[in-house]
Length: 299
Image: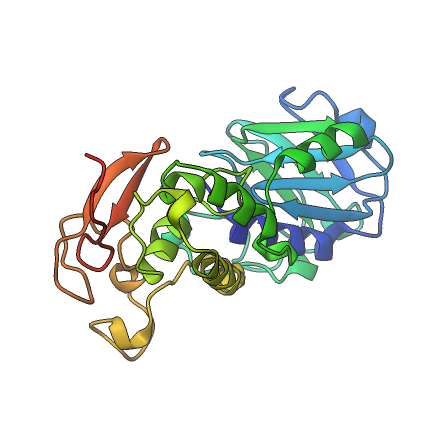
């Protein structure tokens, strides 16, 4: 599932491509029934909060997109492509699709770790986007959007402070590894950032929230903002420090981008202990039992 860095990246790109002008929208396979409500209207802005996108077409006309596990955008220039696959929605700039396509850059984004952002269009060159496989793609009223915002926790990429997250964490006996994945606690932090932030903080994921010191939570929140902002640049999530990688110079290798995420059974870059994994909050959790110790881990 895309995490907050990628959602905010989409918002920035689609704002640059479409905001401030009328936008054409359709659901050519009948998979998006609300196209008439927003088609041809001026797009004011694209909002991002946590893992949610909101395309603001005016009062009670907010296109809500949640990519879920399978959703993804394809961006392109020039004329619209032929309809292929389970296409939910298309959005395009009527003038831009009349121009010739930029050579060799229209493509669907791949799994983030295989895609470093190279070869993609500059945002201002995007003429159209296609959406496939989202968990939700529907038009919200303002009231619906406000209800969504009210149930989400603060978002590090929106400049939100950690106070609300701290209050919820410090009152909970749930493990910190589950709390960080709870979008009502912190919006946008997903499975990758959860594992990596806890490792960088040397905090065991099974530690109960109510025993984690406020100072440490604030430090994790600050780290989240820095790492997630960096991850907006090219979709890659790199959390390792150069001094901790086996290869300290040159481009970061895929296998050295993370400390613990998907590194189960491999030696920790810091201490050499094998990385462990266990399901927590419905997703695979990864941690180093030596660098992230606890007196009594849940079994």
